[in-house]
Amino acid sequence: MTKQIQFSHAQALPAIGQGTWYMGVDPAKRADEVRALQMGIDLGLRLIDTAEMYADGGAELVVGEAMAGRRDDVFLVSKVYPWNAGGQRAAAACEASLKRLKTDYLDLYLLHWRGEIPLEETVAVMETLKQQGKIRRWGVSNLDADDMQELLSIEGGGECATNQVLYHLASRGIEHDLLPWCQQHAIPVMAYCPLAQAGRLRNGLFNHPRLNELAAEKGVTMAQLLLAWVISHEGVMAIPKAGSTEHVRENAAALAVELSEDELAVMEKAFPAPGRKTPLDMV
Image (cartoon, rainbow, N blue to C red; front, side, top):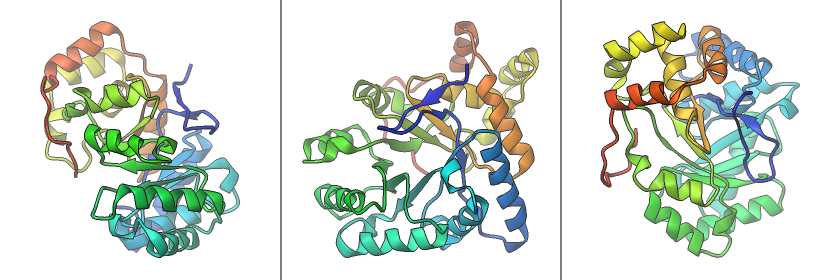
């Protein structure tokens, strides 16, 4: 059975979605990017994650084109800059994203990272956008355990539907306190860069001899092995970049990869968790 994740009152979604970081940068790649996202939707990867930051809105334009005529098939996520996450700036930022995406609502709107605007103000404006029908639910990104605890102490903070953070086999710091906290509070975690796409550790992951041996034994690719590890954790969804149809097929097939306790142990021995509190990893 395909692992699924539930975002507050949303239909359950497959635990792998589609990321769009670095999309919309090169016009020559636009048609391929649109096709890749459309194939992902066809394969059931309904959640598409984007942000006003990505290519200065260019990624949202790509997503808007990919969704044309099939908005109801997509669970659409976008993110707001921290300096836009309050008052009229938030309303304007949300409207601009909706215009680029060619839709009248977002399924999920995230604070991209914490800035100087108080969380109280961000929560208030997110709830207003919900009441206006511009967004269905809201969440956060790149908030650590202390930030999340503070968020839940704020009136309306308990409406937070997710926390999107960097998480992959070679970056396991959230396992110390943030991941258990989110699991305890039934707040799904969205893992960005689950294949270390933008990180310095990618080569170490993909070139690791024992992991390559394990992937070969299972008849899967390294990417599929690593994605299967990420989504093996309770309440965790992976959102790898979906830049080509080949990668989208590979990502979707990872939903069917099962890892035994012994296989998980092999992987985690190769890249152990830090075992202590570490600063939240971000790229």
